[in-house]
Image 1 (cartoon, rainbow, N blue to C red):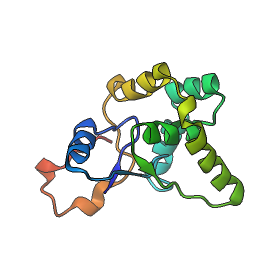
Image 2: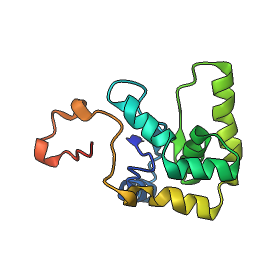
Image 3: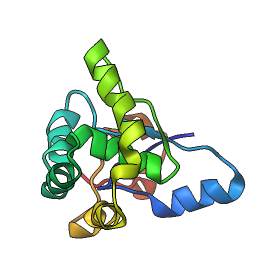
Length: 138
């Protein structure tokens, strides 16, 4: 199943539930939403100080750090690849995911505790769900 799951909204309980039930999880928009309200949030993910620090220490691009974090948690990723070089960078993230040390993973895991969880996808499609049951973290 596809779920929004960047480090700012890791959804640990959902990930644990899916693992217990044998449900494969794929990160939806693992780098942030590509347009609209997500454009600012995408930048927040790629430019987040923790991501930047880990990227520098691991000699990886910020996008590779975010993709590697998901992969290390057993979450599949399918980022949009608009060019051959971009696709190569995304594939490199899979090969380099193991370059993220336990300390890097802890730092990325703890990003959600540094403030309110942040959705990067506009949940307007959730209008069928009562407002009181929607988790808005904009």
